[in-house]
Length: 448
Image (cartoon, rainbow, N blue to C red):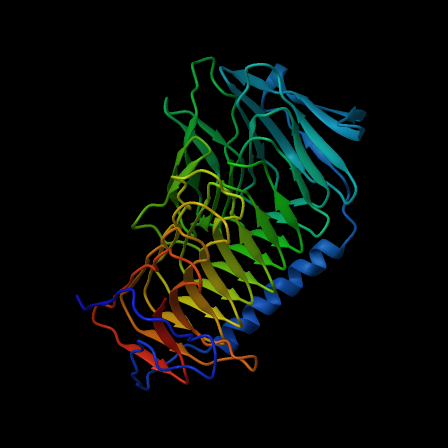
């Protein structure tokens, strides 16, 4: 194992094209590369197809099925919820603190508001789609209470530009076949049955079939309450011009492309199996995942390949933090394929001015890592707290190269801003038997 550690060092500014004489490793090597143009063409075709799909008129259909017997779901239109007209979903099968709903199809049209009723004592609302079409969420989807909401549709789930979540608890959207419980019960969309008259606790996993659909968020801004969890679990997960905001909470993105089980700890923790083929995750066209808050939040991504283009993952502590022992959450990226950052993409865990507390770390585990076009992985402190560490674990080659016309260099950076007493962090590179290539002003550096 080849390990290169970059401790905190002297001040310079590697982001400026006028100063590039800090702690850099310079190497060059020619190697075979995968055609990103081909990959981009495929992605373009997929996105174009989805745009066409979302542009089509949607028949606003929420159609309950009969799999819950006398406990079938019921949809009541023209109800007043939170000051506006909405459709209210009631009924369903109650088991302990769980409420189960089942639909042949589940769509929310542009301008439509759909809310699940939240009976007393219910902490989890689990919804499955047993038909053969994907779910298009183009309006507002909410819970009239504080329960967590799970939406399962193996065919796919799509959010459009007018989508909105009104959920006080956590939200999980997944294309898994079923939710798995600790008593052996599977709440399955592909083999639907009614929940047994037994004690059913929180879901402990999501069971995937052989061909799970994608979760696509295009042009939407989706947010839930502070401190909660938003998990988008495909199949593939694609964000295009999308924003996910969970202040001080958790955002989980990832999926499987073959049968397997993703472990859950309620709606807060997600664990992916090691030996099951994962699906790709991508952020493009100015997408943003933001968990910054006075007490920090976490971002976790698990996939096959992970691609970012002109997009941002942002964690850290915001201005106004008054908790002296506050610690920003972490950003963890774990892929069994390649990771590519391009076109000014940013993975950042920063402490803003006047925030009190220390930064979180960034850990990136992948096969090959490519950082180009002014993209960066960074931890920065603009206050008196310590900046977080960065750890890169790459089994293959690390390529960092290029800069933009406005002087942004591609690189990996930990920095302490001027006029602050907070120290910077460490950068650790575990590169296995691969090469570390820095070219065309690509950098790895520490600044104070």
